[in-house]
Amino acid sequence: MMNFLTKSLPIEIENFVSHLKQSCCLIHFKSFTKSAFVQCRKKIQPEVFKKLSGMLIDEFYTENELGIKLWNGFRVLAVDGSSITLPFTKELKKIYGLTKNQTNTGVVQARVSVLYDVLNKYVLDSQLSPKSVGERALGLLHIEKSRTNDLIIYDRGYPSYDFINTHLTKSIDYLMRVKVSFSGVTKSFIASNKRSQIVEIYPGKNVDISDKQYDKNTPIKVRLLRVDLPCGETELLITSLLHNKKYPNKTFKELYFKRWGVETYYDELKNKLKVEYFSGYSNQSILQDFNAAIFISNVQTLIVSDLEDEIKEQTKNRKIAYKVNTNLSYGFLKNKIITLFFSNTEMEDIVNQLKILFKQELVPIRPNRSNKRNIGKYRRREKPKVTKNQRDSI
Image (cartoon, rainbow, N blue to C red; front, side, top):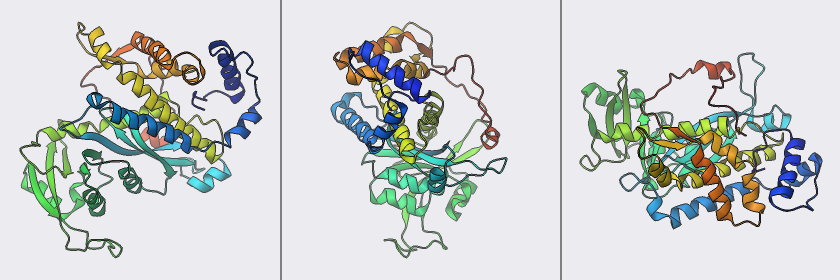
């Protein structure tokens, strides 16, 4: 399941067994049927992949203090949601519900939400839920995986008084984009043309707070920031970082832009890891494949992060910086993952083999490139065009 089950199961099983016999010297390993695999996978809880991913992440953050990238002492995290299309079955339709499309036949879709370290590129937490569960509710679940000295960045679909208050009570700092119409305070701030202002916000008049620990007169002190974009638009940000001298206004535009890392991760998850190419039709299979994909993405990040200094040295005389080709790196991981766990060869030797392959396929980092987003294609569910340099690698 960790070896990218994107082809038909009989082909994947044959390749799996052949690789074990040839590369892992398990010459007596017997083949098995598709039915046998389906029966055996029922004994494996999807959470096992989350556990493996959690162990990998814990080791990175506890055993690698000098290698952890921070911003002003903060671990910079981002939360964002997306949707993935699931097989159309009665079980999945019952669990996740039906989402209308252009033809009104409906598709089964799930909401995905991740807590992503944008500087170190690890997924710290992931959730797969029905579309009826909102992004804000899933965001609150992610907070349980965060800690003091984390700074979490959110898009404008998340802010509310209660959401901000939860961060305050858990001592988690935040930076959120908010709508100008968020409250009378935000409207007044934009009208004032100020760049930054510390204000107090209160619960909305029509919000039910009967089960909350605060009342209508409980203030929260926040800092509002105005960011003017080159296109002429104005962004309004709200943050818990109140210290003007320690955190100058000019730093927040670049800081908020770091949230884009979680957007590009979804491209990686869907188009490179092929997370929607599920190997089964049951909900257990869906969760297994989803959690396994998250785990493998963290394994890939672990290997790539060890290469950064070597790549800088290797390309120091070039005009622009280079990085590992993410798409091809997953292709190189195919079957090597099996060797990594099953071979008698030292794990470090296999990782070094992967590093050599990764370094052979570098791509330039071209700054200030932008592509206009075509939102309509998602509503029409158009099949994305595959460019010459973006062929499938797994």
